[in-house]
Amino acid sequence: MLLSEPIKDIFITEKYHQLGTCSKDGIPNVCYVGAKFLTDDGKIVIVDNYMLKTKDNLLENPNVSLMMRRGGEAYQLKGHCTYVTEGDIYEEARKWMKSKGEKYPAKGALIIEVETMYNSAAGEHAGEKCS
Ligand SMILES: Cc1cc2nc3c(=O)[nH]c(=O)nc-3n(C[C@H](O)[C@H](O)[C@H](O)COP(=O)(O)O)c2cc1C
Image (cartoon, rainbow, N blue to C red; front, side, top):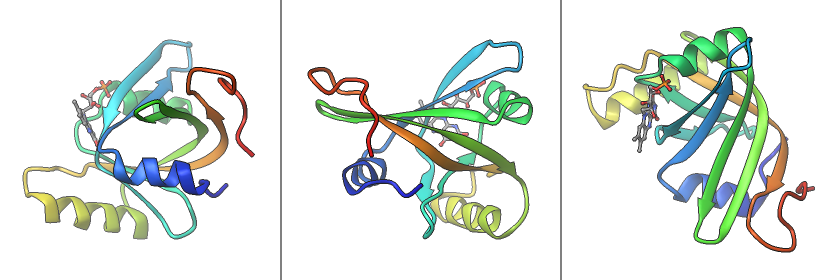
């Protein structure tokens, strides 16, 4: 699913988002992510530089949730994630990360296909699915 323009704009312009994952036993985990970009076909890519529990969870449960916000606007995305350490998208992620600094290990890349988007702002439309 392609991100709608307002969501895409927040995804790109806000520096950090929050990524939720879950172990197969149902233990949740949330971490901050900032090394992110969009592919031309609308997939979200996040670079794994430091992930521990997040990666463990993804390898046993691909379901993710990503929270993003700008001021009072907020969205919750849900989708499926593929963790890659090779291939075109991984290479793009690795090169982009290395261009930011050699200190970033770029151990892998998360490729997220968004399936549902919800409005997470407080107020009348809270929790509503975005079309
Ligand atoms: C503002 C901020 C942005 C971050 N961005 C990333 C990121 O893009 N990639 C990454 O691997 N870790 C990033 N981290 C580190 C993770 O949030 C987290 O510490 C790491 O994944 C280990 O936690 P985990 O065991 O929950 O996976 C960031 C941390 C902060 C505070």
